[in-house]
Image (cartoon, rainbow, N blue to C red; front, side):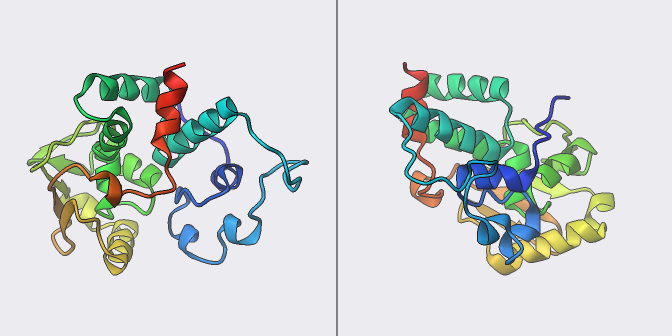
Amino acid sequence: MARNLDPKCRQCRREGEKLFIKGEKCFTDKCSIERRSYAPGQHGQKSGQRLSGYGQQLREKQKIRRLYGILERQFRKIFAEASRRKGQTGENLLQLLEGRLDSVAYRMGFGASRAESRQIVRHNGVMVNGKRVNIPSFNVSPGDTIQLTDAARVHLRTKAAIEAADSRGFPEWIEVDVKAGKGVFKAYPARDELPPSIKEGLVVELYSR
């Protein structure tokens, strides 16, 4: 299974914002963005550099890929599916990314990061409508019930992750029973429920070239 092995904090610094791929560290003052907000590398602190239109589009695509932990080939497939659906392609793209099982498990607090949630899914720690599913890219449908297995629910890291998520609050499009380690994916998120820093229109322009 191919994975992105680039240092996580370096990825955030390259995009110039928190991507929340390091778990709880992202919510503390130890976050690399808090300490060094400039890009990594020898020339990272140089200012005044302007990206071309293509460069901005490419940078935004890379940011979204890193945010959701998606490789290039997977991302292209998801974009193709988004373009086939009715409605705005950019919004469809984000909804498909949020509807992946690993993303839903992350939003429900089953893991401190999407990478950790993906690992829990792969290790048979998550059930969808009562059946074990170990495919992170599995498409969750509105109304589906997602829950941790008994074995996964008692892990200390899982307990800590779901309690931390509960303290911060859950998104409107999911409903979570923290004690039971389960939740319902109520609907795909509306665009205004997702971070405004994501500029999915640039990605649509990039793939329309």
